[in-house]
Image (cartoon, rainbow, N blue to C red; front, side):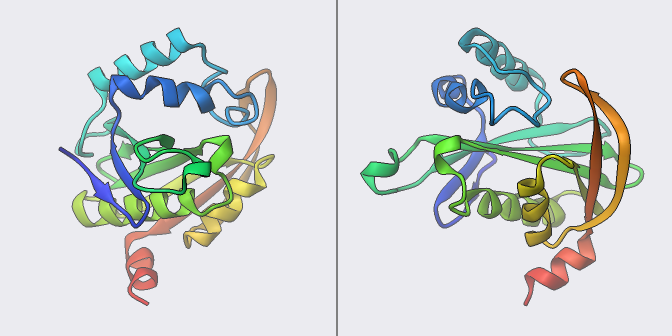
Length: 193
């Protein structure tokens, strides 16, 4: 089984029994505001989980391959939740096998934000991906109305390479997008310090 361990989290493939935890944040309007899916009902979460289970991968080899890893808490104080709870997820897709280009995204449960979980999970996935997949570059497309995600990308060592005006018609509005990126050599050099 594909698993990445961090100090506080286990990043692992989605399971159907995770739906109750997923529903807590995937149905929250502020959490999905800049995410491609709408506020989901429990039934929509089940459908999305089943689709991911049927089409997701555990490696990135061919253009279009993608993986979804949930963030399972290892052990935390009882007032914050319970061990085993899913508090977020990482999404990664191989945009181009030829160009060795992948994109990455993250979503954090509203009750677990600003505690470093997104950085911990995303950094671990990037490290794993650069070490185990034929990747030269990882990018993140970030809505300019979401400066918190941009700050996280910068904390990860990604640089803002561009801003695209009205680049996407998203949930009823044209939105501007920032492109963040990091090369394998840059990530490796930064990570070895």
